[in-house]
Length: 413
Image (cartoon, rainbow, N blue to C red; front, side, top):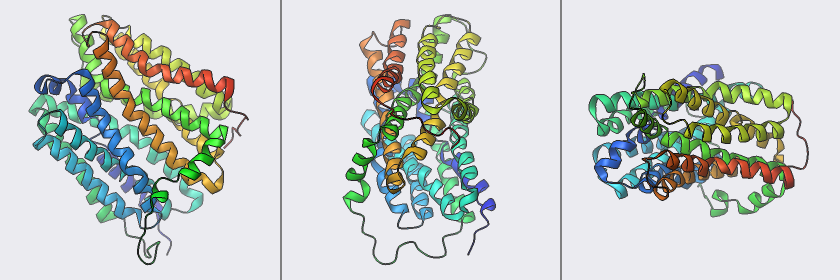
């Protein structure tokens, strides 16, 4: 049976948007939780990082399972996990340890939905149509996270932080219902007989070593890791940064900090798509190096902007987001076209694992540096914190230009 693929993609885009509504919840409530739970900046960053730890913990198993069973089953379980993690934060979290646990559960839920969602599409769409559908699916990540900041901020100001998690938990639950009701199961299971998942299926170390021997593929993977350190640290702390800027200037922003964070995040969607088009013309490696250096400069300039007018800070925040996201699709696409066919799946799994590993490191590192440099109540603290996450892209560029990427990839891929 051939599936009418065009009918499924809109439902998966809607499900993806709903499933990502919990992404920005913690960043939005970080400051009130710091006060209520008496958290240090490091502890606040660790709770943000716990989300990505949960993702890393589950994504190898989730992707391995989708090769053996219908990815729809994995997706449904992941959506329920994300909803349970958000509900747990809203109803039961009472401090650092419980916050860590429920954020891990929330991140595990994302691992069960994001990549399995791509697999749902790839299993149901004809090969010639697949890339266009996947491009829309990946672009909707930015839309979902942007709405997450907006919705969480509105709920926080109207009802309080526990309602943020409690109400947003309806998002992943809605994703569960959309996939359950509108995405049909595959007519035949992929795997007959009992399912045996071995450790080497979840962590294919031998294949990962082979991937890393390819300098081009390894370069894109390490570049993506540096990219995610900066990206997820920025997303986790941007609301707190806007709050600090408003305090320093003594003049409120035109919108709430949470609303601005959501609006800023939307600029990453066209930046990622257009950035890939620029890379096709300029060359992927050259484009990535220019963007990473530009992103580092913009991150430091943004940190130095405290005390300026609100519109200057917002423009710089948008510019920083545009630079961060301008190489996102390029890094992933570069890996896909550079990895050898026999290990492409393992390469993509390692790419995702290391990227979210960077996502786990970034927010905690940012908070740790804030603590080291006299908390978060002075401009220099924020400058050092931003420096601690943008420097990885600079180091990556310096290393790769000297020792790394060996050949020029095709730019028309």
